Image (cartoon, rainbow, N blue to C red; front, side, top):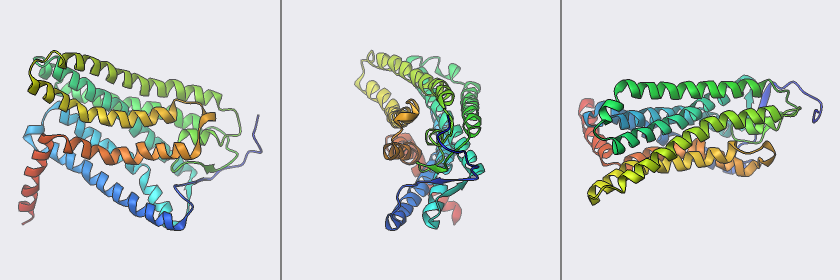
Length: 312
């Protein structure tokens, strides 16, 4: 049954972070700095991997790809947020909403499996050190990254098609960007089918990759506990801690938003969680991986003077 008369929607209105003009200026400055720091922070990690011989390992190959994904991920939402904050307009075109949802979804789904691939890499490094180079060869790494992209693209394509075939009775999205749960609430018809598809396919992407990570770390921890050397144990844990922190922030947020019924969608609460996994998580990731990793810090320290010399 229709909620009310269906209207032709040519654009959507994003509620945004605040209605207060003074707060909008503050949010614009904060978001702009977060965006700049995130882009450059992740770029530095990519450059460190590209130009440092010591970092030419599968672990840093996955990290460089994850950094590239983070740049794409935050760029799918924040520039539009900044544009709306500075202009005072909160609109996004129908096609713009489709593009934003699709690009955001591709990056989010792909990140799930890249994080799982990173856990698999750590599992092989710690549990099968003698076979590590044979298992995690260049071809395997490329296949894992390519497979992550394929899963991400196919998953969000299904959701995008199903979501934008719905008739919409309203165009006001109670979110800071175009996302599936708030769009479903605008539909004139029952979205039970969409919710089931979201739960099943998102569950496949989110929970399956999360379970792979959990299983990898169960094996990793059991292997670490058999290491009698304190130094060896500390080193093994240090290579996994950064990844675990990123996994906790990322998966905790998206599971909270996507694996629950539409009826329990709480506007303000879900907006804050959405900001956590779309803005805060990509912002924190470069710091988590660089500040906790001496090899990355040393690589960046060596590259910086070299860049300065080349300029002169």
